[in-house]
Image (tube, rainbow, N blue to C red):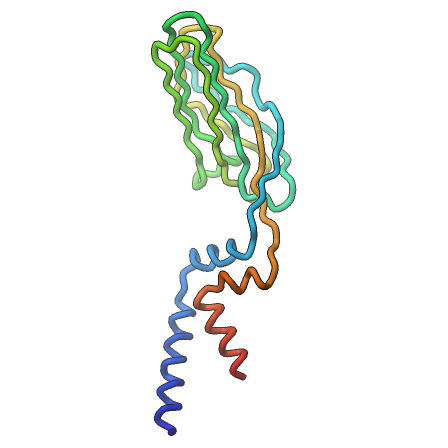
Length: 186
């Protein structure tokens, strides 16, 4: 009987040891599963018509987010006017205030287009530890007609909402499961 008990304890110790070796990323994922993402729509024109040709400016926009935001949604709208076979290129990197880790890249190449438009939405990661500015660093541009343009709009935010305890139990990690079982056994 003692041997079974010591084997159970050894197995339990191994489980606890394994649970304690979970990486930081697994903890973050577990934290994210405790919250439910929600979209908050916004309508905010950040730029007028962008018609850059062979220039690479850095643009900064002040964006004040609601609480608990983990990313902003940036819409890039492109209009290629009805002026014949002209070209329009724009490439940029977007990030929150000089965040070099979480950068979203955009590339649009319209070659010999005639009367075309498109809209793309980009997710820009956001951190509460950084100032609330959106940095858009244009890395290349080319435009052969002044009627062709890009526009940048802030169209929404992704936020986290809290979820119920029942929902949390459905998403337990091994670490939480081991700890809960230990507490329930005592």
